[in-house]
Every structure is written in C-alpha cells, then in structure tokens.
Length: 357
Ligand code: NAD
Ligand code: TDX
Image (cartoon, rainbow, N blue to C red; front, side, top):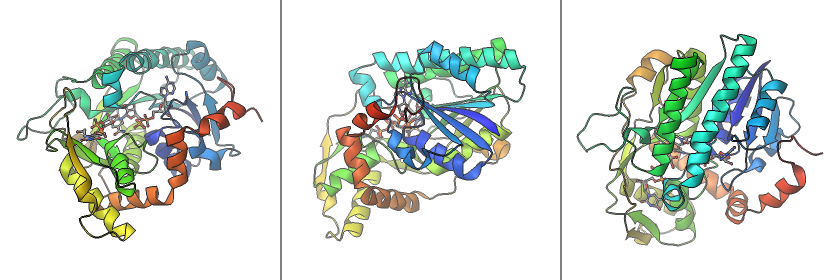
C-alpha cells in the first residue's frame, strides 16, 4: 500500500483529487491534512469516513510539530500539496493569511519532507506542488501562451504568494535534492467549488435571480480546465514526471469572462425551463478588480509530450455537468454558504487528530 499525504483535501480541487485517486489508485492510502478554513468541508468525504484507505487529520500546514508527527507516523511515498488560500479578491482584502499559508506553510512541508527523505533514503518519494498559471502574470491578446520557462511576473498578493512558494519548492530541489514536481495549471471548474469563484457564483446567482457581477468590460480571458482532467494530470506528473521539472496543465479552452457568464446563463435557463435570455438580463458590469490580469493561456506541449496528459473534457460538455451538479447539490451549497458544517467539525474532530469517535 502506498501512503500519500494530501494537503487541502477538503477544498475544491483536493476533494476531487481524493475522489479520483480513491477510484483509480486502489493501493493508495490517503491522509488528508486540512485546516478546514471557510473553503474546506470535511463532509465532502463523508462516504470515506470508515474506509481504511482514507484518514482525515484536522490541522494546519504551518504547524511544524503536527506535520513532523505525521511524517513520523506514516511512511509517505509522496505529498500532493493543494492547501492554500486560493481566492484573488480575498488576497486583495487581506493578504496576511496568504503569506502565512502559501509561503510559510509550504516551507514547513518542505522541511518535514526533506527530513523524511533523508531518514529513509527514499529515492522514489515525490513532492507534487500544485500551483497556478497566475505566477506568470498577464498576457496581451496576441502574446504566445505561457511555457514552463516563461518568467514569473505575478500581479496579486495571491499570485505573488504562490510564486514565492514555487521558488521555495524549486530551491529545495536544487539545494537539497528533494524530489519535487511543480505543476502550474489554469482556472479549474467542476463540482465542490466554493461559490466565490466565477462559475459557481454565476450559476447560483442565476438560480436566485441575483445580479451577475462581471468585472470591468468582461473581456479578460482565462483558460478553463475541468477539475477531473487536472486530477488526471497530477497523477501523471507524479508517476511519470522528472524531479525538478515543471509541467503546465491547461484545458485548451480560452474564453472571455463574458462568454463564460453568457454560456452559464444559457445552460441554467435551459435546465430550469426559463425563457431563453432570462438570465443574461442579470449581467451587471461592476468596478474592475485592481491589478486584474488581462489574459492567461497555457502552452501544453511539454505535458503532452512528457507525461502523456491531454485535456479530455470540452468546456460546453463539462460546464453542463457542473451546472447539473450544483442543481442536484443545493444542500451542499447551503452548508458551505452558512458554514453549518462547522458545528459538525467541532463535535467530530480535535485539532491534529483523527476522528474522535
Ligand atoms: P480551495 O480554496 O477550494 O481549498 C483550499 C483548501 O486548503 C481548503 O480545504 C482549506 O481548508 C485548506 N487550507 C487552507 N489553509 C490551510 C492551512 N493553513 N493548512 C491546512 N489546510 C489549509 O482551493 P482550490 O481551488 O481547491 O485550490 C487548490 C490548490 O490549487 C491551491 O494551491 C491553488 O493555488 C491551486 N490552484 C487552483 C486553481 C483553481 O482554479 N481553483 C487553479 C490553479 C491552481
Ligand atoms: O464576480 C466575479 N466577476 C468576475 O468578473 C468574479 C468572482 C470573478 N470575475 C472575473 C475575474 C477573473 O478574470 O472572472 C475571472 C475568474 O475569476 P475567479 O473565479 O476569481 O478566478 P481567478 O482570479 O482567475 O483565479 C482562479 O484561477 C487561478 C483561482 O481562484 C485561483 O486559485 C487559481 O490560481
């Protein structure tokens, strides 16, 4: 049985990743370390509570004693590091926690992972660091897409903190030989995404007949990656990637924000039996995000060639599946919006511990 540490496994991508790995790698035991911030929901894995292949630990990646004790307790074969503060708008309102979690937290994990590799002389160990295309900064409309050698030029406190964490991870490879793999991916979407991010926010506002706030003129461009494709790429990067290397993961689906919002509107109208065009009337242009990057785009050639990754889902197909998921999971939406699951956490878990009962 392989032992893997997943950090941030109660968040959006981490949840999808654990579900993906549980299905596709039956000989992996998953230890999920998550601080359960507003963005983490342990109820996402309620079906795994009694599963011997899954262990949840409630704790903070900045807690060096806790992280070290986990490396002592489990002989990890790898780490998939998702835990982060992830929302750009929140990083503008309050950057502190972004520096703590994304920079200091990553350092704590690297330190513990290096001690572990040295102790066990484990050459097969992998530290997979999950990062973002936002570290490369903003592209002009006609500029070539980001490659793995594009210079870093982050714009927001969020992307600057992720860039700092990428640099630490690469330094631990070059200086200490820790076998790391860095992945930089584009905008994910799919089930379990917290409704502060563009797509779930727009789906839920359409359902509630609330305004759909589009920043600036709506012409900013993002590349959209279905979360299951991302999970597939991460497993490939771990199993086939070369330590010290970076792999860019994209969805091959560049869209303006306005195109995305209009598509969401049309899908929701169709699925809920509203008159076509009803939800588009809710689109409201609002003040732009400060430092708003114009465009992100990923050149996927290296990932295609070296780890055999290719996006499998088209945007229209996967967006429709995503809207269905939100329509069928309104209880989940209510619980993350009200934070009702927090009471459940308090009675079920102690800090740094597995389940109480
Ligand atoms: P998310 O905000 O949905 O989830 C983050 C998870 O990390 C939550 O469960 C939260 O409780 C946990 N967490 C936060 N601080 C912690 C701490 N100090 N200790 C332990 N756990 C902590 O984020 P996401 O969208 O799932 O993103 C996961 C990773 O992928 C992040 O590193 C993010 O930078 C990266 N990424 C995300 C996207 C995207 O589109 N969502 C794109 C590129 C890269
Ligand atoms: O209400 C909104 N209106 C709007 O126009 C929101 C929430 C967003 N936007 C715009 C801003 C962006 O151009 O939509 C685009 C997408 O916004 P977000 O969903 O906030 O994502 P983004 O800022 O692009 O960052 C996301 O992708 C890269 C994730 O949040 C990051 O964690 C990841 O690194």
